[in-house]
Each structure stands twice: as C-alpha cells, then as structure tokens.
Length: 466
Image (cartoon, rainbow, N blue to C red; front, top):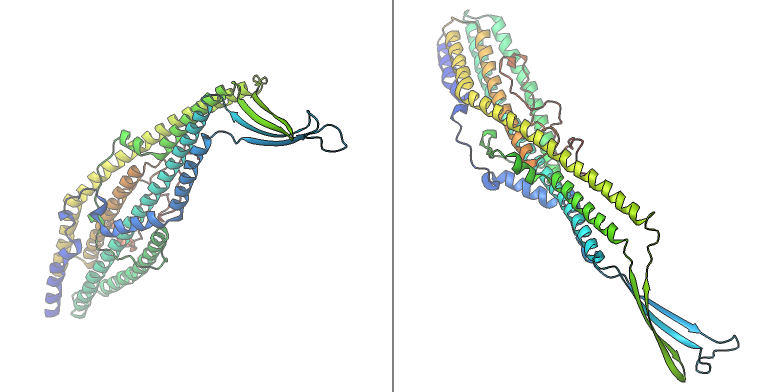
C-alpha cells in the first residue's frame, strides 16, 4: 500500500510535464528568414544547389543572349566572280568586257523591325524569368513544408515518449494495486496492451521521420540519410502576415508569365504588320580589268511583298488570335489565383481560431480532466479505464493541436507561394493507439494531397505554359 501511495502522487506531479504548457506558447515572431537558422540553412542549400534552379537560371541567361542577336543587321554577303569573253583563255586585261568582280551586299530591314525583334526577345526573357521564379518559389515552399513536417513528426515522437512514461507508471500502479488486491488483472493487461501499441506507433513515426529526412535531403542535394538536427518546435515557427489578393497577384509567376506572353504577342503583331513593308539591300562592288581601268558598281535592291494577302496578312491574323488567347489566359490565371487566395484566407482564419481554442480552452480542460481522473483512480473512486482514456484524450488533443499548427503553416506557405493548385497539407505519422480517438481531430485543408515534400502538385488548368 505504501508503494501505491508513493506512485500515485508521482503521476499527478508528473502530469503537467506532458502538456508542456501549450497554452503558454510565446507570441508569434515576425516572419524573417533568420527566425530559424536551421530553416535558413536548408533554404540556402536548396536554392543554391538544386539542379532545377540551375537549369532555370541557364534558360534565363540563354534567352538574354537572344536580345542583342535580334537587333543586329543581317549578315552581309561577299560575292566573287569572273566575267570572260570567249572560251579560249582568260581575257581580263585584253578585252574591255572581261573582268574580275568583288561585291559586298548589306541587307537593311525596314526601319523599326530590328527594334521590335529585340522587344520580342526581351518579352521572352520575362517569360523565362517567370518560370525561374516559379521554380524557386516552389522549391522554397517544398523546403518549408518538409521542415514543418519534420518538426511535426518529432513533436509527435515527443508526445509518444511522454505517453510511454505515464503508461509505464500507470502499469506499475495497476500492478501494485493488483498485488494488494485493490485492482483487477484487466487493468494491468490493458496498461501492458497500450504500451505495446505505443511501440508500434513509435516505429511508424521513426519510419516517417526517415522518409521526411530523405525528401528534405533530396531538395538540398544531400545523402538521404544525412541528419538534420533541430532545436525549434512546431509552435516556434513564425506565422507570416496574411497577404492581400493584390499582393498574391504581384508574387504570382504564372500571372507574370501570362502577361509577358501577351506583351510578346503584341510585339509580334506589330512586327507582322511591318513585314508588309519592303526590306532593302545595298550592294557595292569593283571589277578589276588587269591593265585596263577597273570598273565599279553600286546597287539598291528592294524586296517586293507581293504575296501579302496570303502571307503577311495571314501572319497578322495568326498573332491577333494568339493575343486574344493569351489575354484569356491572364484572366483565367487571375480568377483562379483569387479563388485560391480566398480559400486560404478562410482556412487561415479558421485554423487560427482553432489554434487559439486549443491554447486557451481544450488543452487546459483536457489537462484538468486527466489530473482529475488520476486523482479519482488513486483514491479508488474511478476505474483504471477512465484514467487511461483521459490520458489518451489528452495526448490526442495535443496531437491535434500540433496538426492544427502544421496546417496553419501549410496555408501560409501556399499563400506565399501563390500556388494555383490545391494546398498540400503538412502531415506527420499516426499516434497509433485506437484509444487515442478520444482526442479531437485537427481540421485540415486537404487530406488527399501527397505529404512528401518536393513531390509535384497539380497546378490547375491555368498553369503557366512556358
């Protein structure tokens, strides 16, 4: 009986350690890249080493090299020739109409064509820059999601470790009560069953942690098994300020790319109209005649766009139709982006309220319920199952609180990413025991998207076409 009295107060005194004062979480820090040095390092490595970023950067530089090319005059032509009288021998210097010829021809496009071609090439650079921005933003979002998922899994592992401590103490208490005739064998067996279930859950979380690590290491071009030490908890991640629809539109690479496509097509229309004007070519040459005085020539050639109805006019119509299509693309992207922004704003507001409810009410009440159940079991006024369910409900509420924090981060990340597709959730492993269903379930924005960071997501029907 003395052992029983020593163990029961230990459970009650240790109980507050399980909650880790979630309702006393410090205020959310401002969203700065330096807020978490581990996350900042992961982002720097991923953005500096990932081959997709390097490929996008190379594409931008390649398109930039096209701008000066587009504004250069066409290559000149050097013509060498021989005009000779008769077939009996070279008559240069003997006959006035026999001579060598050296001619130089320089084409000149109609004024304005070269400038328009440079503007078309510059618009192409804007398109490739938008693609590069999308690659960088998506990669950054994948790293942030992967890091939050890693913190979530490790937070869940801490919960299981704490639950294991309490269940081991409860198992010793049930054994002591059974030995002194105050408890039943069923209580002891139930405590042992829950401990076995926790082992299974721990193994599953360890596997989930390794999977998340491998995905994060792939993003930063490291070996899949490389460790990533973390000191922060999921609640320590800063919550960025919500973005307005106008700010999201300003960040959207798809919208910027669609607008650049419109500008490029408008310049192509102007260029097609100028193609109805003729181009020129100036030729200058000299004809040496040996001992006779040399001859020279100067000429001007003009192209004749006589097939304008079937060629130039058709090109203008082609680009006009393309411009209309690109304009519709801009509106489609803007509409979808507004929808996604509104969806995420609603989810953020709901998740914030749910988070505050956990901090200020649910976790406090769950902790009080657990303490009361332990005290009643200690006094012999409540069954062991009631205390066990209260413990599992407490752990379940804490797990749901972590999921709420993770989904709030997921919504903010997708909002900052200006993603056109559905918001990918940040999910961890299962806390496992069937009795944990007593804990509240965290609301999530989506349960069907993949949880592996870095996996491609559906970008919607209006995704940028590059």
